[in-house]
Length: 135
Ligand SMILES: [Zn+2]
Ligand SMILES: [Zn+2]
Image 1 (cartoon, rainbow, N blue to C red):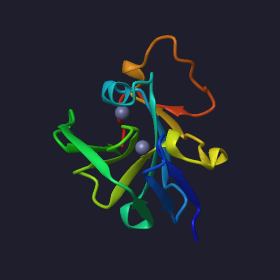
Image 2 (cartoon, rainbow, N blue to C red):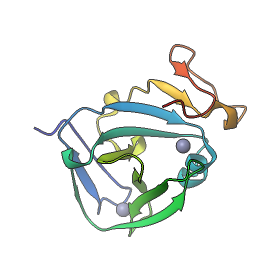
Image 3 (cartoon, helix red, strand yellow):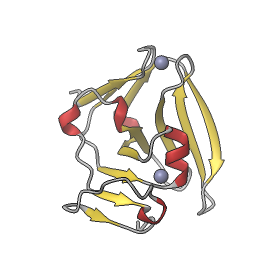
């Protein structure tokens, strides 16, 4: 059964996910800020084999501070950033929360990389926070 779904800005890339997100993070790291063009990124994490994607994706890979290869996937037509993979985390796919249709599902559990957040970004004090990546 499809639990949640999403699409890019132009609609050519869409996906269905068959499980609830395993975790949801707000990430204030510089990579997320640059990649999203926003002051922080919100990611949902799901097992890669529980998501079905249709449409053409382009990708960009770069190396993270920890040495792993990060791959970012975006709609090859409109450029919306949608998914990510980390070579250190097998079978885990991240989904950018802004692409999700079921808005009530997006409940971040933690703010990560507080050290590099934009000073004016307000933070929900009711959820956990970490200076960097504690996991
Ligand atoms: Zn698109
Ligand atoms: Zn990040």
